[in-house]
Image (cartoon, rainbow over all chains, first blue to last red; front, side, top):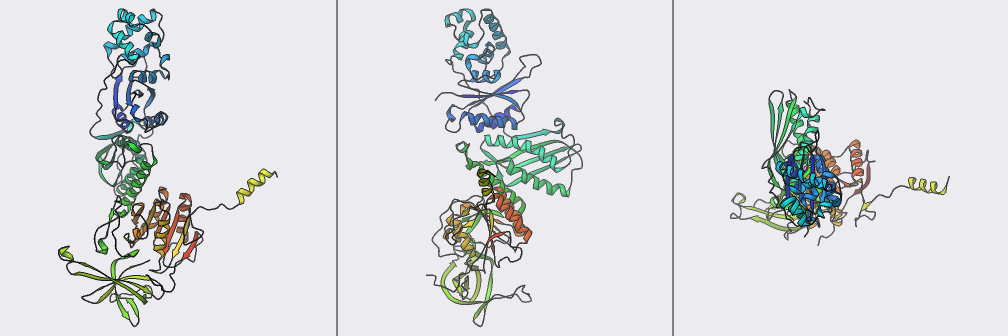
Length: 450
Length: 167
């Protein structure tokens, strides 16, 4: 398959490595060109990130990628231009000169062809000399240079000229330098750099600052196809520090999921101990991660977003209600009704085993029953005053029993567990799930076929 | 007034037809973007009715909120409900906040709530949230809401009637 390159040309200082890491989401083949000095006096230094996207045509269109990269660049607060071409130097030159056609590139594009992955001062000077000579010969565009015969090139510009011509004609293959992202994800925000937040002691402005840091951290995590499960938040104050180690109830892969949890936690802590001094610096460190739901396959499909929304919701609920209070239910292979299902964060889609019909509601504690004439009545503890008149059921039909017993070798703690379950139909048509303990002859209400 | 303007006016004043979930037990279906109440005594079959609705709409994600968790998930697959698409929450005294979060997430087509009797203002809030999310909210209760029930679009009382043979 043909090579296709996207180049992000970054102007001015920028968190280049972090941005490159976030680009892993779009392609596994990434290269970074470190900052070079400004080409014109008073200009800005430039650096670049290259993405090989030729093998990702089934995942996204170039148009979509262009828009996604524009959003990503904005998230990192970077001024950049994006170029797309069939090779690295052309993509770089196109991004630099803001052009879409290769034949319109000026001679100055030769700097990028000579050393696309790294700025080299010696090479730069050599190319500068070559461009002066070419201008004297009446050449204006890169295309004019490319049309020169190889024999002429060799006699005038030596082997460098031949190599440049080959690169323009894509006859020379460039080796990609390896890009290795930083081991730890740390995002810092210095408040003195933000004009609008010279002083910050409240939660709302802090969350605003945290959002930008979390946005970048999450973009980097997505690049690694991971979600955060534990993070460390450090606030450097004018005097002293405050720090939190936050273990998320559910790993999060998006800022929209993470921020409400941070808000809940900080709101709770600030209510007890407010910040006494203004914040100087905010550092967000990702300590532990888990793999994200899906990798690159669903890059631009909505299932990934739905999973993130689900995680964000469950995380928020667990933070507020308590661990295990928001859950999916997985069936367990256990005869005991109380242990026949488990709370979990992810569904196993396990097929149910064949068991007799189960009630839709099961009481946390079985309620003892006793007979009052022809009625079955829940037994109250001595001294309890009922809020409502106690229920009385006149039973019309008994179905069962279904014997559930546990032998000592299955679970020693439940030795002697023997229950006969009945489905009772009352005269009014309501259906109850009642068990008796054969050894004692007592009856207990355990649930309703509600 | 021109004919075009009259037609425009007519479309504006004609009540909008609410989308609804297919439900074999109730011909008109269960309305989306509205609150429906299923009431009945313990064991009357209201939970089973909710499960039947969920089973008949298999592409919908469901949120299930209870203050004290007594729902028994083992019964769900027996009623044709795939457990993987149901998110449960045991909310204690925060059932309304939880339901609101679930509605706002936009993930769920049906939200089932089993909690204490709700006040009029709480019902109104729930109705607005349901409308905004275009979600069907099912309230399970023992007794039907009588006073201040206007935010509830549909009230169904569940009663199995006289006993019938199970087999």
